[in-house]
Amino acid sequence: MPRSARPALLLAGLLAAAGTAHFVAPRRFDAVVPKALPGSPRAWTQASGAAELALAAGLAHPTTRQATARATALFFVAVFPANVKMAYDWRNRPTAAKTLAYARLPLQVPLILWARKAARTGQ
Image 1 (cartoon, rainbow, N blue to C red):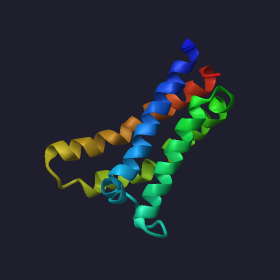
Image 2: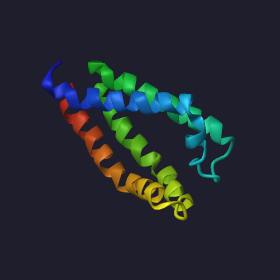
Image 3: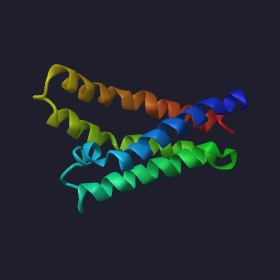
């Protein structure tokens, strides 16, 4: 594996695992779907899981890697409202759960930067 492809392939692995989790354990994802979105939470869970799997596949292929990495950065921006909802909903939970929910918010920044790096280096 070329060294320049590593960020993209590692990100593909993360997205593949997350996308799979949306189908294996969907309830926890259903719970963070904002109520303002139309349709059922499960439909949004499945759509976001499918999107993560598609992004993982696109990152794995050199010919689609650069465009997919840019789309991945936009995806991480798009799912941020679900993380905000989770932090709000979990504000009264035990400290460990609340800390996990709050920690997800700033985590979006390195994920976006990781995707941008993959777009620059992962040809």
